[in-house]
Length: 374
Image 1: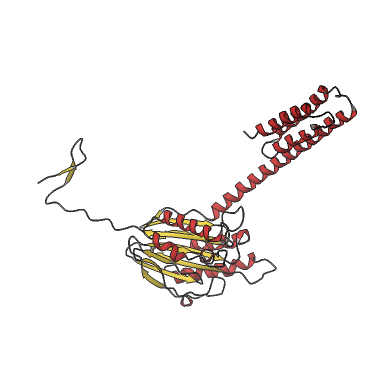
Image 2 (image 1 turned 30 degrees about the horizontal axis):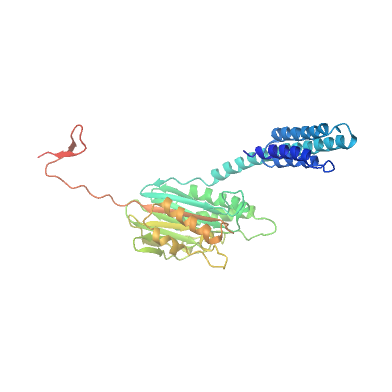
């Protein structure tokens, strides 16, 4: 469809040039056709349009009987040269586009390896996650999350390293890797936090840029959700507290934050373990500060609890979909910091089936209902 535009221009300019007075020459305007074509087509199509434009210029000269005059020949030659330059531009653009696609494919693969997508279900939990990167062309940045099933229950981590965008990916990878291994080796969350702190203390300084030495740290929230009962334990290393969504609304889980990772807290007693009840049907919402510190045009923070409260009964996917829509609308479509959220819903308890006296329900052939045996 777009190809009709340059072809129509060639035809119109050629016809009108023959109708206007002889001292008015519209042939040089034919260069518009290949220039427009280069904006949406490749080099071959642009070359064909350039050839048609030069041919139309030659036809105009032949029509007026001046084809071999020096002025007309120069116009045809200039149009051919400009068309050739336009084709060369298309070739270079296509080469850069292919290079960018290869680089983007490699970057996306690396980002997916780093930030594995969480499974839709772990134990009694239904899970959904959302990541909004502030860096253009990036899918992840300085925010991080991970979840794994252990003997103590499901352990979940969400965190935020200092900085944002691509420069923080290495630090996020370090913490995620340490969590995936240490989550299975330590019996309590304070022990796990100490292991993460030790890993960060050993390795994070090597990732610090020379212009900002000693300024690398990360806030992290660790949660342990029991499979056997409704007990949930959380430990905050300087990270915002989670929200607990229920039929009663949205409540902030009270936590006692310790120092962020990288601040040399190397003993379990440096951390406070907070315990609360996570009932069946409730949703636990973990998030990074990029969500609650997102500002609108007048500088107001995003009211996460207020926006999430009406959707407490929704599925985790629907909840995060609505939060994403409201968050982007709040900031005008673009975040200034990476943002991540995890929604975990504990499956409601299945209702018990009524017991029948000495009976079993067995479907009759060809029928959907069952008959109770006396």
